[in-house]
Image (cartoon, rainbow, N blue to C red; front, side, top):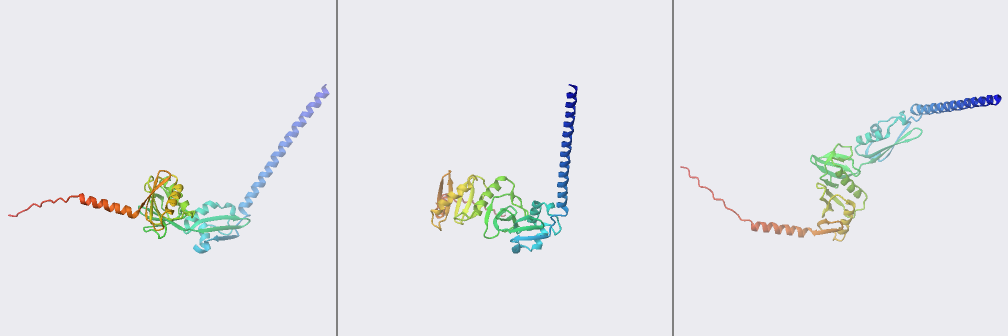
Length: 291
């Protein structure tokens, strides 16, 4: 019995030693892996992936010299690509390169940096109390002037929080941005049969849209903008191509159309009637005799 007990104790001790060795080997392997990863990262951030070529693509030749673009991005040959914070560089370059709608930077390993630049396209005149912001079709502020640029969609009633050239347009209230974004997407989609020339969002519950400088659409509040514009276009399509008038959204599935000439005649009649009913009152002048 004693021999058996001695054998069991020895076996238990050997098992513990084996487990300790395995744990030791696991820790050693883990340390080796961590050191290897650290070495790879260090080499990547120092010796490997340094920029040898900077390639500028897109619309760059139309708006800026390649050297201007590279300078705005703030990189040079020899910089390590792994150390670059691309999003920060893209934002910084976009604010400097006013005529660039987007600046997209990509790494092409092992040593090439590609900068793609797309040209800004003016699309909106956003009027506010101090002038007019010329805004691109994707919402970048291109100019801050007193006068609007010809041929762009006019936006009235939008109250901007950001007016700095090179920044993205933003409003003091989120509703302004949602309304603007909805119309922005509609216009960008190129699905409108009748062009929108102006939008007045001064009253969130009574937004006015001008189609083709001939039909004024009172669409009501800012809910379901896509549906309301689509519905208005269907009504406009039923009118002669040169018809001028006023379109009003009634409820959720009806529109009322009034000819511009009829409205003007009615207004003249009202003015004429008011003038007829108005009585002229003569105020006698006092005679002041000097003695």
